[in-house]
Length: 257
Length: 249
Image (cartoon, rainbow over all chains, first blue to last red; front, side, top):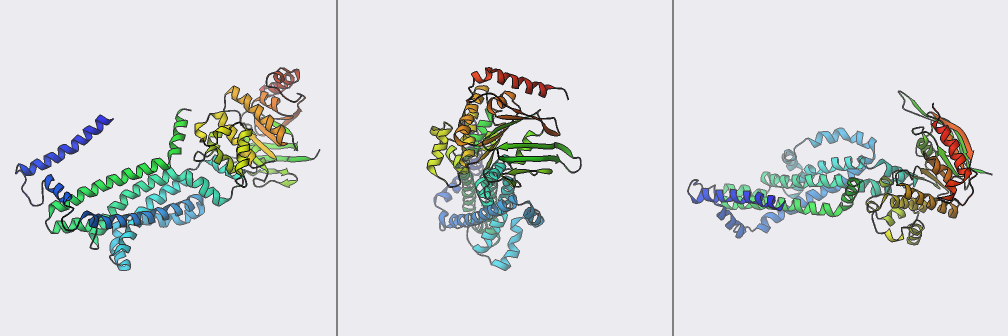
């Protein structure tokens, strides 16, 4: 397992070395193809004037706000729709129409309504990240064990307590899976929204560096972006493992009969 | 004696397009404090009958009355104990939290008392899936008692544990029954279990089921796991019931 991981890591290092060599050997001579060492230098100096904190801080803040809004709305609505088939049938067509719209397509019309600042970007991020969480929560609520619901009935548990005490925990594995998908979407949409509108954040930075022909800084931002995406996913998986440890225990029990 | 539970001409048909009759017409009355078993061939609709009595599913015809009141929804004071203990306990709650789920007000002392009664005082902080099948069923029994029921409906609660654990659980349920004055209605396909535990046994026919006959059980109490099973009265009733159950249709 560890040997395989090391080998995978070796492939990454090999590719980076090849890149470095392609510049050093003079095989590729281009302003837009800086050596890996130059990119690392740019990372080290923190994008010269702007600084990483400046560039990434605002992006991460927007992404977090959009994601949290999506999670709150998606889980709340998902619980209600999952628990009420009637409500679900009424809302379903609307949901289907909006779900297939690519989030960034909403940027131009929303600029009319919200301007080009944070309100716009956070909204677009939240809308795009909302649907996977909503759909997964609905599916999770519906996947609650029917025996659990019968137990609730024989104990005459009020509806609200059934929703929060049984259906919500039953849905959690699905909710987390939806949130993880949405986290990736939120990062993508953050960068795209910043590229389309506004004057700060990593999306804006990458585009401006391209215009300014500062390829080293541009690649440095991309490298850092990929590292941040990786870390966020890892962080979320760790959180998920902590929250859903009972589900793993249950799986183990099922596996052993 | 005043009847606590009256089941009158209860029928159940499933499906509208191609209706399948599960219960033809079931009549049975259970007095307060009685331990009555319902036995019948597998698939005869025993569990369906118990779920109708519990108010979990509606009857197609006839009615169930608890203390004279018609049962339409799960009534207060009636708790249904499910066969699938591993699916009826909540895996995200500890043993103590599962028991507290049944309590009307989360009285810490009462929870501890109940776990003591079922012999699980030391396991309150564990999770259900960490326990053996027999222990899990003890937790569900404690949780059922937490609701302070006057009637306990048992749906083959001992059928998915091993034979020795089953005998232990029989002892536990008789002990709790003796202490609490509960009325118990047990559905089972295990004739020995029915004879060992109950005061009376209702034998159901094949589907669509009716009560074929109600047998009074002369086996004296207290019942003892070994001696009672060797008693001539135990053997005679077992013989009669098994013969009837094995009769070709």
